Each structure stands twice: as C-alpha cells, then as structure tokens.
Image (tube, rainbow, N blue to C red; front, top):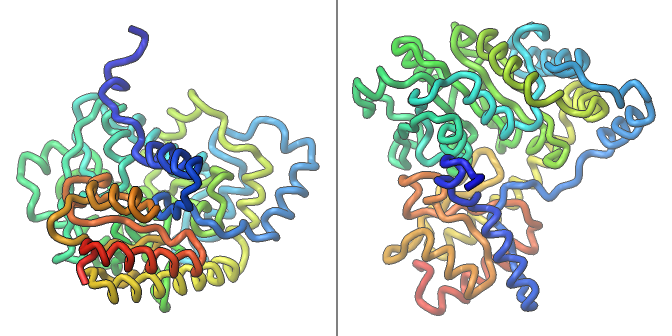
Length: 392
C-alpha cells in the first residue's frame, strides 16, 4: 500500500540478484569467480589516497560543498578536457560535479524530460538508462546497435514518428556492455542527426581512459556545435579505480547543466569536499597510473580473448573498456547459458539480455580479476566443454 506503482513495476537490479546467489554458493564452500560486475579490482593510486588524507585533515573540507561542486574540482575537469581533448570548458557554466555518473545520469533524465517524453537508449546498453527513464515517467525507444555494424548507431532504422517523439538520446563509448569503440566520425554523425531532429544528446564516457594499443577514445565535445545540444559524463571510477569514492562530472551544454544543477541542488549537496579535491589532484596528474592500469587490463583482455577463441567462441577483440562480449553457443538463451556457467562451474557472467533485447545470444565478461583467475575461468570453461556446451 505504501509503494509507488513505478517501483512495483521495476524489477530488482539484476546485479544485486547475482551477488545474492554468489554469497549463497560461497556459503556452500563453492569457489565462485565473479565476472559479472564491472568494478575494477585494482587499487586506487597512492598519490590520490595521500591527497585525500591531507584534505581530510583540513576542517574547511568538512563543511557543505557548493551545489555544483568545488571550484577546484571544476577547474581540474576543465584542465583535463583542454589537455586531453583540446576542448575549452567554462568551469562556471559548463561543468557540474556528480556523485558518480550513475546518479548524475538518472537525475539528468528527471531534470530534462516530462512524463510521457521519449528517450532513445542504446540496445544493447547500460540498464540504468532504461530504468531511470521509467522512474522519470518517460518512454524508452531502443536505438538499434548490432555486431554487423560494429555497434555503431543505426539512425536510419528509426522511424519518422520515433525521431519526432524523441527528446533525449544516450550514447556510450567505449561501450558497456559490448566493449565497442568508435572514431570521432560516429559522434559527428550523432550530432548531425540530433541537430536535424532537435534531440539533446548524452554521451556516457565512463570508460574513456581505459583503452588499449594506442587507441584514444574521442569526446563528443570535440565535434563542432556539440555544445549546442550535448553533454558528456565522465567518471573517475574506472580510470582511477575510485568506484566507491562516487565522484564524476558532466560537461557541455549550459542549459542541460543548469537543469541538472537545479534538480540536484534540491535533493543533494554534492560530494564530500575532500573527495572532490583528491579527484581534482587525479585529473591534473600525468595519467601515468591510468596508462599502467590500462596495460594490466589489456593483458587480461588478451588472455581472455585468446582463451575464448581457443574454445570456439565468436568474439571481437576490444580496444577499450573492462569487458569482453562473446557470442554464446546455439541452443541456449543468454540467461540459460549464464545460469549453467554459475551452477555447474562457478563462474558468474552477465546474460546479454540484461542490456536489452539485442543482447540475446551474448554474455558480458568483466576483466576485473587477476590473470591467474582468468586462466582458471578458461580451465573451467574447458571442463564445461567436456559436457558439450562450449562451441569448440
């Protein structure tokens, strides 16, 4: 009686269900290898922790933060964008601190759409986009993506009514879950499409610095005229291994930034100042720690990719993110395959359908375990193969 209809209609967050099952199996003495959640296992660099410890000692940092984040943090974001992307940002009007991008994205949707408005979300895509649209009373329309088109949006497959109804569009590269990467021309096409249809754009760039083999992920703000209608979210969670710190930012269009600022100022008071100042220190660094950690993820990716190929899986080699996205054997749904991996060989993976209907036929594997554990994953999958399940 005391629960809203929108909560009743919302299924439990998929990853929380997996975590519950993992604990049940571990209580039974089963060694579960969790490749389900995209949380980096590497430590936060010491120079960031040292800065946090320093700032915690300063009493001024125990007061409320400015609603839009500390000036020091916003200036550090501006420095990062200028240094890394060659993009100029105004810290006063084009940058806002968020308590992690998950919070920022969900609240932006509330700040921008009205009940009944349509939002274009990637399929496959990060589940929070759809749930946040639901909670804001909006409608989701899937933006088609597929392996044949390298998971580049197929704007031409949207109908005229779908284009006309859409107010907001989400993009995410490097992609969660597919690990797809793009060049700047894809974002140019997206901005061109959005301008011609008067749709605001949100680019979720949470994995922008986790890249391999010299690939550099572009920013949507490098596209001419992007600031007229686009914002980009960035996170320190994946690049600096600061998931629990809950600190990120949104940059770009002033009107969208102001709307989110207004919304958030009524429901939160930004992040703890000491965390913001430690994050600012990280953004002004030479990124050598980020590059070092990306090399570790690359080594893991290579090992996982090679093992999956040897087992006969159809899989693309990623250029970024902390995921790998193999196609599963015929004769199974993604959920069935994931369930059997967990129950029979103790490996947690995420079924592709968690990310939308086009995820059927795939699973997402996180690279957030050490190489030795990846070797064990491949060994267990070979054992699984003896039962005639894996495709080799």
